[in-house]
Image 1 (cartoon, rainbow, N blue to C red):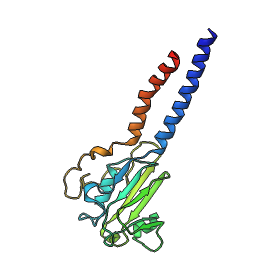
Image 2 (cartoon, rainbow, N blue to C red; image 1 turned 90 degrees about the vertical axis):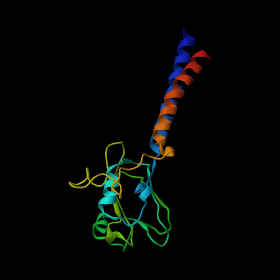
Image 3 (tube, rainbow, N blue to C red; image 1 turned 30 degrees about the vertical axis):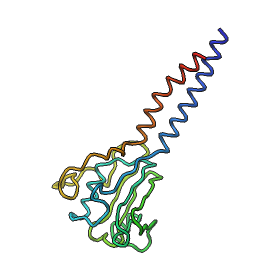
Image 4 (spheres, one colour; image 1 turned 180 degrees about the vertical axis):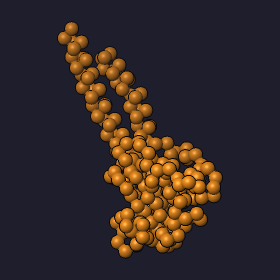
Length: 189
């Protein structure tokens, strides 16, 4: 009986370690989003609604990465505060990337604001909300009346590329498969 209790005690410790490991993976691995999808980070034909609609189609969480695909010398990607976003003030950005493509890691919850310092007045700007969980985000809820959650040409957005499956899902699925294997191994040893 004592051997059985020892095995279950070891099993419980191992299970706890596996659970903690899975939590770390879940929190630390994010998804990469290409801003504007195939349209990229360029001057939008429909103004600011283009990137607003794009943001409303996604849920951003801490650890995710925004990739701004743009041509160096033609566009920039600058992280700014809300006032600079609203007024297209380019004087004191939080971060200003002038070489494309540029990546920004979303490392805290809250609002993030991005502009092109060259074309902000033409609507090349993006506001998102980052959460710690998978609750909906974007720049302000659902699209405004008369607008559609479509990409710049009016067509529906393409499905995510085959390699863009969230690594959070992959890590969780791996954990779910590995835990029973580890438990059985410990019980049989």
